[in-house]
Length: 368
Ligand code: TXA
Ligand code: MG
Image 1 (cartoon, rainbow, N blue to C red):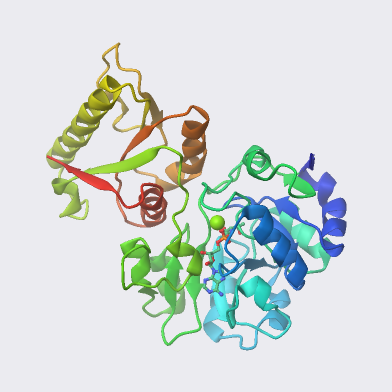
Image 2: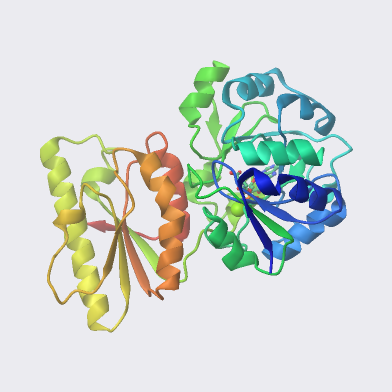
């Protein structure tokens, strides 16, 4: 049984565990991380073992300030400094060429290292006190939704780590944006709360999007640059299916109010029908919708499906905040099938939809 300590109280003990080669789960603004000394190959091996994660999938190294980056990289591009000054502490991970000090166990054998400075007071103090960079993947069992509460960490890693620093539910709820600065052009490897538009604007140049993000990282012939993006991810136990309509798909969600209303009728109608069929077969069904569409669903009293509102679609951050928690709740409730509405890919919506598509194994139905 782990020690779980709330807030700042546990920081000194946590730092001590890290210096002694142990593992501590820590809060960030995105999701909870599973930390170990990033400079110690043995600590990285322990992290992979605790998560049940393939060891070719590199870890993100967490620092408490920009000055701590220098010893970890062999080249410090001007673009990196600019992004750090604009977005750190914050949900942005930057890939740079690694220094010798960073072991291959931490980088999954790569010559590059992913670095980020998270925006969470407890964790920044924890990194400072440890006096070491902290390797930290999301603190979930490999393949499961990332943990957004200490409780989720305990559920997945109970007995496998020394301590959990608990700072309550996270703010953003999906993992950091990853940008690779080791190629010719800056490239987005994973969408997050800092958007590709935010990055381009700060750098004053175009930022490419790794084709694997759009393909979902599972298509033949496309090899994601972030090794982690190739694995089936965030997967609930239930089979999950996204539902969209042609109206939305082909028009990039730029629709009139009438079209929007028609699209909503199509999507909710289609989901209602799918639920009816599944329930007739005795399956337990869950629905993921938004506040704007909640009342459009069939209110028949014999329908048992669990409808979960994950937020307002006009504010994607309200939905990223809830997504992983809701997926875990469906697991707890032994739901067999999940139907989820598709939302816009604009802005932070791109990060939300990326996680939803992965959770659904890229399965999407087009309603008419
Ligand atoms: O928000 C986050 O980034 C959270 C919190 C804990 O900081 N961490 C997180 O770590 O999401 P993880 O390990 O679950 O995801 C790291 C991703 C993986 O897809 C991995 O392949 C990629 O980053 N990555 C790490 N180092 C890389 C590198 N050198 N080159 C390319 N991709 C890398
Ligand atoms: Mg992860």
